[in-house]
Image (cartoon, rainbow, N blue to C red; front, side, top):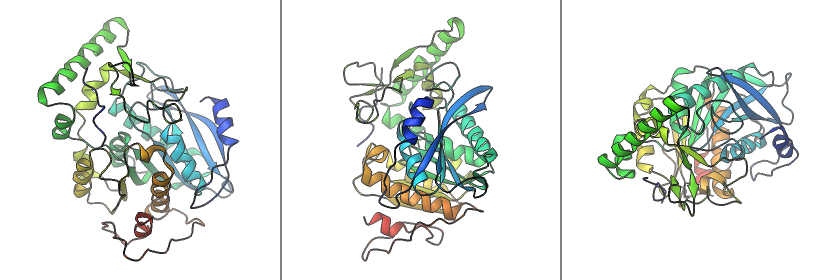
Length: 363
């Protein structure tokens, strides 16, 4: 089994626990409540948590965002962290489990399927538009890591998704896949392994599962990878920590690059040269013709973007401001602008700097 250890330089009760906790941001301290919700995608019931800022209700609907995380993850991992951060900044945020993951229904389980995950994002956007607390003209999407490709693809076919932010995006094409996974022959071997697992499931109903992450089991797709193997970070009880081997073909044949020129929604990209495949992010960004801005942070690893306060706060500040200014119909919030720091480099932009990226980057 090819591993990716070298790739990177709840339930209602769980929702109640989250809702009872107040989180503090350097940008803005605010209360929010968390509601367990459900909606349908592909005939399956998906479950999520809706983070609703204080002061937002049917009489005062707010800007909103769908938040999705890295591959093989559930809503209580990095999606929850960013949903909390957005709610602190006055944005209604939905984190949910994709089909076959976490609390959501769907078979087979633990499938990293770009097609169905993109469909689920579209369904999540449609669900948000039905909520009375949400300004349906100001719904945005935040995709982290692998789901950045799914979020971007969803935006090309979902007019209600009015702006997009990609944080630590994993955006690959076949050349990057070959470089990451050991070459053309190794990639084809994984694809063949995935096809065999899919055939076994089709004939027997039995999924071929391996650990997603481990420090001891070398079958794991992410062997000795941080965050996912640390109990105080991503290795949480609500995560099944499984990977369906039948996922390989869909994942490895995904090409994010053709999506870039099709994207019409304003884009914010937040990344770091120290994080995963920055060359893919640069290639994708260069091909985007929609209004766009990028923020590159120094010495931030892929996993820092998931849960480390400095990286998360800076990313969330930029994302929240982008969602307020990049989505037609969006409402400004009370977040104060940040004074630019003298000497800070200005991140590349093809629109006027409504998002104060210079000050954020300089922190």
